[in-house]
Length: 246
Image (cartoon, rainbow, N blue to C red; front, side, top):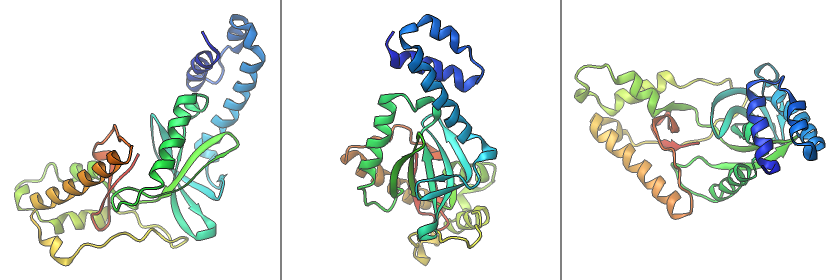
């Protein structure tokens, strides 16, 4: 077994239990003993930086982490602030378990570089990528809104759903949108015309679906396949503009 695969096996075990028996691996692979011990020290430092109690005020490049927003297999997302421009940001961080996976790290960086060149109203803009003390991150626009999954949960039990209008969805978005303190400026999003809110529920869904399809087509034509499109990965701004994330 080569070093990368050995290291990945150890890191996966380490994520579950910090007190792993590293000597077991050193005895099994004596040729890699020093390198494994060095990597484990780095992994411990990285894992400490992910502990929730340590996140407030932690700095990554030009950004300060404020709180965790969510996590998945390919990243942990934090709400952050960029003090120099007084703006909220979303900071996606490569999980510790993938830090030493060369292919995952390459994909993480290369896809960010491609998406950063995109100019589409329904794809979240990327501001920068970086590495701070072994932590790889992508900084992007923060979308203050609700996911399609949230919207579905709120209306799935309603009777006579065919009587709903786009204006009803607007009310849900406005009620559910988290209000941030005015310590920074939210991204300015597109507006909808007043006529839009008179659409029927089904016309509203068709419009949102068409906008998402156009964004996916744009990404695919430019070399990016999303691979995990689902309601939780589509955010609606407070003006019901769909934004593809993750």
